[in-house]
Amino acid sequence: MIPQAFIQDLIARVDIVELIQRYIPLKKAGANYSACCPFHNEKSPSFTVSPSKQFYHCFGCGAHGTAIGFLMEYSGLGFVDAVKDLAQQMGLEVPDDGPAFSGPAREQQRSLIDVMGTAARFYREQLKLNPRAIDYLKRRGLTGDIAARFGIGFAPEGWQNLDKAFPKYDEPALAEAGLVIDNDAGRRYDRFRDRIMFPIQDAKGNVIAFGGRILDAGEPKYLNSPETPLFEKGRELYGLPQARVGIRETGTVIVVEGYMDVVALAQFGVANAVATLGTATTPTHVQKLLRQADRLVFCFDGDKAGRKAARRGLEASLPHLADDKSVCFLFLPAEHDPDSYVREHGAEAFQLAARNATPLGRFLIDSMAEGCDLATAEGRAHLVHNAKEMVPKIAAPVLRLQIVRDLAQVAQLSAEETATALGLAPPPRAAKPYSPDKFGKGSFGKKPLPPPEPRVGVVPLERQLLRVLLAQPRLGDRVPHELVAQLPATDERAAVMAIIDAGEDGSLLDAPLGAWIEHFRDSSHEAAVVRAMQSIEEGYVDESKLEVSLTDLLERLELQAIEAELKTLQGLIASGRANSDAAGRLGALLAKKQKLKSGQTA
Image (cartoon, rainbow, N blue to C red; front, side, top):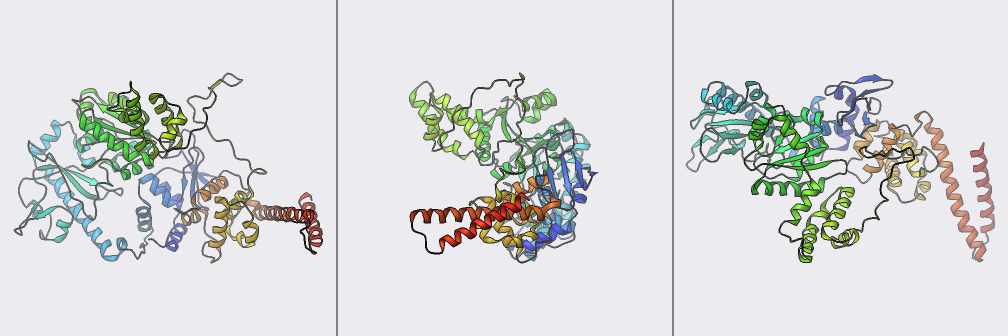
């Protein structure tokens, strides 16, 4: 586990403007900087970066975060990798007591990355020297530019060609990296021989593994690196670094099955495709891709094996679905894979097919209906039985509701009956049918925006208090615990208490807003803190009058506490259960209440 103190120090040191400017152009806009958002398509800039808060926020799509969060979203890194990447940029060493960050493990990783980089350079040089391999790539329609873009190389025939690339062929790191095999007789030989070599890169562009395709007939057609300390195939995707710009421009990522599919699509201008690495799609793959794209299209052959692979992709997707994301399935004709389809029909036809791919909801119901005779009660019951395994796993609540209603139609049940059979809460009654408003205009095709949040009055006190304390944590020492304790037991109240507690040691009191976001990352308070942060960015807090706002809030809280006690005392007096001090206490509370009200009126 990375120490919180290090993360806070990292956030304090980094210049978020300088970091983000390396990836997208920013323009000065008052105290902040602005740009068109890199996470959704827009023509007018709604993406802002605050150097004082060390924070970015998009008013269009709601994307937000710190320098760490930006690296995670933009580059598809996990939290630990984003921290390590940022620390490296700042010249800092990430401290940790865990084995994954111990000195020897870190040194081993660096050593293996160096070894893989050396092998990749060797294979690229060998490609230039081998007319047979060059001819193979030309016959597949690949240019030298596209081969260079993907770092494609060639492993020559022979048993120990890597002996020419490394000073010591018996170096243990070669075996650890999966480049060589040591047999039982103690003989070492190259794993990849007479194969076109496709380097597999991590999010930072380091070569971590290879996929090798045989030139002529033979088995296996593709040979992949084994899993190593650098490479876990259930987490990695081929072509992701090269596809990142295409994914960002289209908002879509296309998942195919083979290296040549990715490269051929890129050759024809379809630059947003990636491939799984000889394994089924995993939940980690889906999670990684949906961080970078709003739409995920699985592209498979239309045969039995393709539909089986699609089913695995479907199952991996369900726990990571969101109502603002979509997952679709494209099935090509049985005689085609993406490589052959794009060569025969062209990029436009392929992109059109991807746009018209089957939505997840329809594919899910079709999959669950396989083998069910929907003309019979038994067949429809079987369908609902199949659905019980899948539908409750859908993480997107509105999509799940829509699918329950679609399923109910097919099963000839009500939505309430279907939900009950699936072990879900019954859906709310359907809304009234759409009708144009009084101006004759509807809203189909537009993404509805949430109503603006009121700035005063109806906003709960605990939410207002959380905003003020996030904007100026030092004010927390002025907030009595007993006043906070009387607030409703909401996430906001819990977050207020956490901020007060976290500020007591002083380490975070002068930290920017971004540091507080990272402090609460993955905690039970994260959602409430993020909501409050967005309200601050969107102007629901007057940051020039925070002390005045806090004084007003504390007076309202005190008044609320007085009124609660008055109600209790009045009840005791009316029932004859009050003690002798009750009347005096009642008078004192009424006077205090009047004084507070007079102060507020003044």
